[in-house]
Length: 288
Image (cartoon, rainbow, N blue to C red):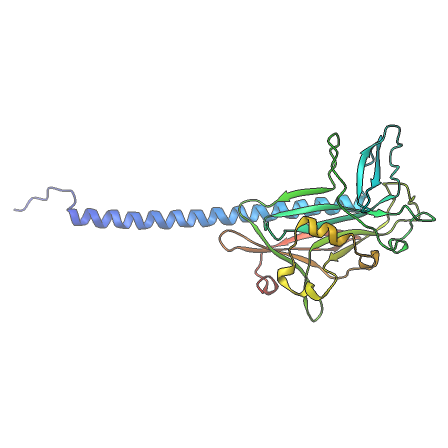
């Protein structure tokens, strides 16, 4: 009678180890993909929350109202903050808050976005500013950072977990698809309470604006991302008429994750204000 001594042959051991290795790789890959998907979802939600916070700042007219600080202009009509002992709180020497611009990505970084404070040059106004159209142009952006101030007019923020910005666009009906440099949250009606020499403005109406190049290049995807410096230089040459109208369309930000996941954040008007809403979907307009 043959006795079974137990154990495995070399061949059986090799088969067992091979199957175990394949199973381990499969489980590890599944775990990695699940973790990546979770991180992408979290990153998109955090971006959505950040955008809503910025839009809320614009909705409520948040702007520095700092004692002993004044706003002045250099030879290129670029505004900046400076120390001015005895300066009354809010006295802006012709600087008027016009809103916020959110630059989504640049030509060298697809995981960052920049929040610009739009400032209008109202020094030559003969009366208080009631409507944005009252100004011929506002020569905005790039207020310098003070060493002793927590306020920075250009704030750099970033996405997490390898989430990338593809581009930002809005869709004209029926076409074309217009690529956007930045999302603007701008004031069109100051409620008749704005002074030409005040930072704060008592705004009562805010609108969504798509900040794009001044020419047909807005229809070219590669022109959707520019440097911070180029954005600032370009926007200072725009007239307020580019912003003084209701922007009825939704502006969409296309996002992609490290494992190819896709999401879109739509920014539009909601209950009299502006809001951002994340949608985890694959959209044809995000894959052109």
